[in-house]
Length: 78
Image 1 (tube, one colour):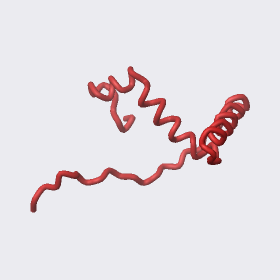
Image 2 (tube, one colour; image 1 turned 90 degrees about the vertical axis):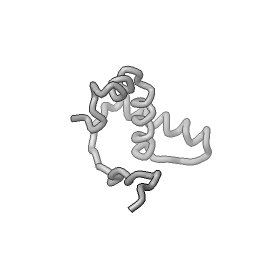
Image 3 (cartoon, helix red, strand yellow; image 1 turned 180 degrees about the vertical axis):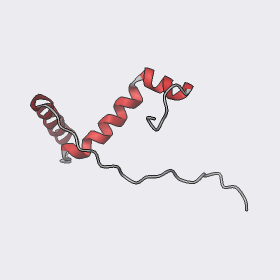
Image 4 (tube, helix red, strand yellow; image 1 turned 60 degrees about the horizontal axis):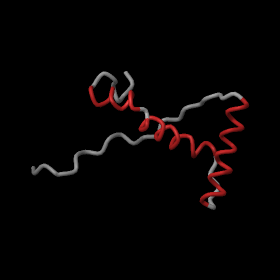
């Protein structure tokens, strides 16, 4: 069998997390969602925005990215 350039896709099964946030954070998240709506003309629920916000945060954290690259931090968080 020939090897494909595209490797096998990783597990993409969503993992549902339940979190509790303080009221002030909830208000700021709602304000962000409102600004998102004003900017893009599309209303997205806070719950839909949070995963993308977390992805952007993790991608911008230099120490975390460096840890992933050097192997001192596991991508799986274990």
